Amino acid sequence: MIKILRIVALLVVSSFLLMIHSCTKDEFTPNVHKDHATTSIRASIPRIVPNGKGGINVFVTVSNQKGEVVKGLTNKNFTFELIDGSGQSQILSPSGPGQLPSLIISAMALDYSGSMYTDTFSIPAMESAAATFIDLKNSYDQIELIKFSNDVQVTVPLTDNLFLLLAGLDDTSFVGKSSTALYAALQTGLDNIIGLAASNPTYLPSIIGFTDGKNNQPPHHPDSLVFNSIVNQVPIYSIGYGSSPDTTLLKSISNQTGGQFFWSPYGSDVQTVYQHVNGQLTNTTIIPLPGPQSKGKVTIRCTVKYNAVAGQLEAVAEKDFYY
Image (cartoon, rainbow, N blue to C red):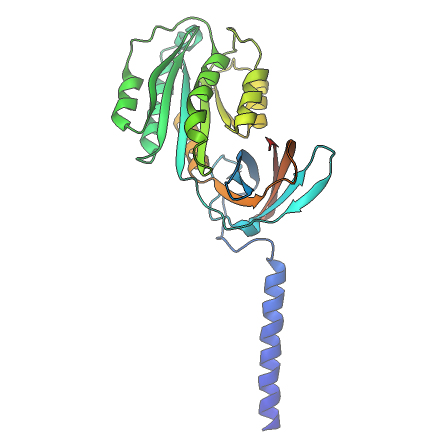
């Protein structure tokens, strides 16, 4: 009898130690799935807004080395810091579970400047990719369609109507083939969506700019655009096409505003790029956090840890927020 009791006790202790070891090994992240494809990750914070409950909602997007969104993340994958104006840092713990955006609001700015017509495939490739993005939207998501060259035309105002958007894309009445008013087009989209975006702390707005060239119409500098984007917490995704875009500048605009830059030199993967942008928007995780203790400019820093077959992967993102 004593021998049997010893065996039972040994089994109980062994099971307990095994459980403790397993929890310690993977305590920073849940066992999401066996991910063989991901070898590195990238994180961005597209939006930070007051959540109406005394705290803030921080929107976090995580993608792999191919631009594909990493799904299945929970609060255990994220660590947050708040850095105030004096450089002091404090850890912020989530005040609730993460959730997906309740509405995606996108302003798409498409470049019809003269350089886009130097070949026969640039415009059709852009329009085909834009159609893919429109087709991927949920029925209630809203999109605004903007066409620009030296002038900026809101071809289709914000709508969830798929047929209106596709008809606007097919409309050939816009006269382009001139210079490139990229910053003005992006600012127009920002101005048109911030009102709707401000009405709900779980809405995710974005600007998506597609261009093959450099801005050469007023305004000639993106400083005001970037500032307005950060203040209103609207990320800008930029897609450079061909060999001539100012990739450094476009990447800077996107990185500062919480978006992402993509480059498609030959246009063969433009549809895939739009699919990646759609995936990042629709799979953004919204984490509720305590709000800053005082008003003013703060920086929110997010560290993401993720288990894949390649190992324990990590990425850091941060964004300024005016509270």
